[in-house]
Image (cartoon, rainbow, N blue to C red):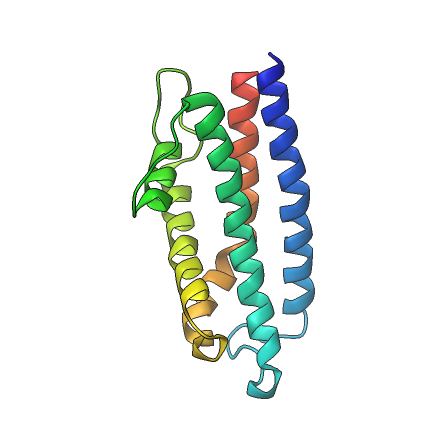
Length: 157
């Protein structure tokens, strides 16, 4: 039972951090027209928003890694381990129900793809056109992620 409590504490600690990221994101977006994005001379705002998206995904992945290690006792390996981890969280296992829905997995895959771009590109290569779709969905994905993971934890308690 203490293993589940430790996992729950880990998840709650990470969600406090993810909630703080959401607050930063919302503050940034207060001054930005979602259709046009920040003005070119305020390039740092676009990069700050990209960083919020990146940090959110990394936080969620951290939670999924802990679930995979503690409950499944199997963390994916290889070049596609990030995608495989999302698939693993969407699957029912002998020891647990799926952690996330198929719809949320698809949304998180989009953030994973963006994470890859952010890690491998220069900030000047980011275009608002490519980011706008994720920016529009960010708050909803954040809320659904919390809800689905909390539902999962309540089932295994």
